[in-house]
Amino acid sequence: MIVEKSTRSNQRYKSSLQYLSMNGSTVMQSENLPFRIIQKHYAPMSESYRILVIHSVLVANKALAIATAYQQRHPEVALDLRFLEEAALLHDIGIFRCHAPEIHCFGAEPYIKHGIIGRAILEEEGLPRHALVCERHTGAGLTKEDVRAQQLPLPMRDYLPLSFEEKIICLADRFYVKEPAALYRPLSLERIGEKMAQYGAEALARWKELRSMLAE
Ligand SMILES: [Fe+2]
Image (cartoon, rainbow, N blue to C red; front, side, top):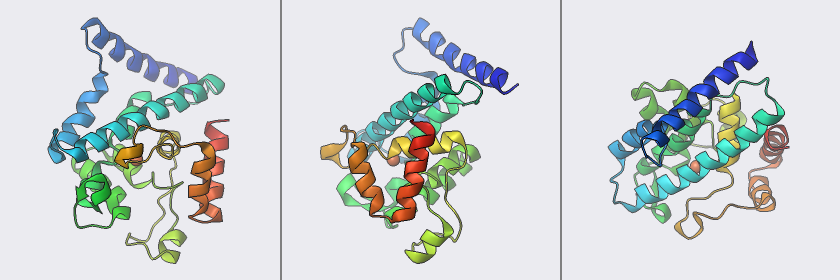
């Protein structure tokens, strides 16, 4: 039953790609939705747009690679690749409202809030499932206890990736930073591990668990 659902979902995904390649396009059909939303909030000629789009495409590409490899090992698990790609392209949509001048974002909010800001934007777009990816992709997820202990300016709740797609995007996002000088360069697993360790032993353990589950 699960296999059947997975196969149907991915057949739809493949057929959308085939349709577009027949029409000579080099882009995927699902690009339309994320980019239409991104362009409501980012001027296409701006540096913040360039950074967001390059980062998001790299994360989407990595997420699809992780998902495809995972599905080959676990064909019984249904993964929604179309949703995965769209959500990966939209996961950082909230950064423009945050203060992060190094990545050309000049909003007033602390950067840690970009996830909940993204969630609000995507909920308004009628995309509640994509919206959850926004607030669950930070680090290896955040717990209520992290919010309390680090006094983060976030509503008191857990921000942990739960679905396979949420976990895959969270994992894929760790490979790429948004600083312009390092935008295209994937981080090594060793470097990601070092960064995760800075957030504490539990964050490091959650990231290692994601890795061993999805990218064995
Ligand atoms: Fe990201």
